[in-house]
Amino acid sequence: MTLLQTRIPAGAVDGEGAATSGLATLRRWREGDLPHAFLCSKTALPAAIFLLIVVVAVVGAPWIAPHTPYDLATLDLLDAQLPPAWLAGGKAAYLLGTDEQGRDVLSAIIYGARTSLMVACLSVLMAASFGTVLGLLSGFLGGVIDGVTMRVADIQMTIPDIMLALLATGILHASLPRELQSHAALLILVLAIGFSSWPQYARVIRASTMAERHKDYVAAARVTGVHPVRIVFAHILPNITGPICILATQGFASAILAESALSFIGVGMPVTEPSLGTMIRVGNSYLFAGEWWTCIFPSMALCAIVLSINLLGDWLKDTLNPKLG
Image 1 (cartoon, rainbow, N blue to C red):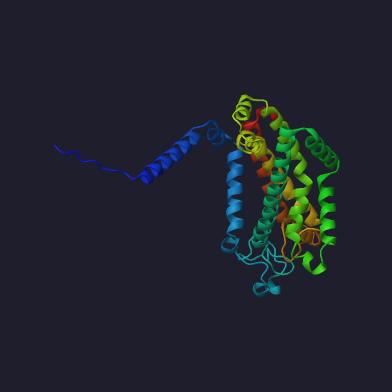
Image 2 (tube, helix red, strand yellow):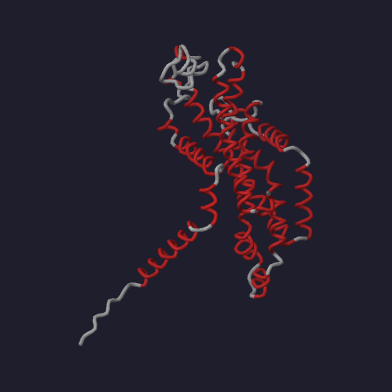
């Protein structure tokens, strides 16, 4: 009797094992407490759905926006200062009306929100990365590094973030030639907002690191000869992602408000590449002249985005770390 043996390549077994492990991880996550709490939340779920719609709209702005508001070839001054479509004199093609140059307000909000969200994403990424690294090193190493880092953070936290961002923006603008300032406006805003908000991350991550470094798994890693850098970034960091997520979510809303405030006072994005703050600043000039929609609708969009992010951040704080509630 001959036994037929089928040999399976090792790579195929490894691939199937990885796929099985990935599916098992996904299944465990889906059956965990976090997705259930998210789906049962009366605030987090609507906020996340709204933010998802906003992200889809701003990413697909060239295809979703009814018009291209900053292409001069598509603008018609005869359509300037049109009210919203449901008011007398409005047109169905311009749902939220037009501004003084004939730009569609709805399309301008979509493009402006894309700029605001981009600045917020990059500035939060910068602040979170810089603050997390400093917080990890301060909490794990202590000594001079901890003392210097925390004293600098304490001094910086005595100054309002918006004042620091305004100072940093002024210094960066003054250090660049005038012809490059408008082209580097987005980068300047990212650096200014990110620089002003790193101390919050550093202080919280330092406290979490100091609590984690005395636990048994860190002692076991030290005994087995694991390098301190690997202990910090491969062992401690994965266990303190909760506070980082909470701070990043709340900092995202603050970054949007900071960008809007800087643009409103004229040191943010230029008119040729506007954000929500720039639109509110320009529309504010026409607010009492009857053209209220150019200011009110961007303001409503800004408030809705920030409110949704804050609701999501509050839910994360209550779920991941109830002691902070």
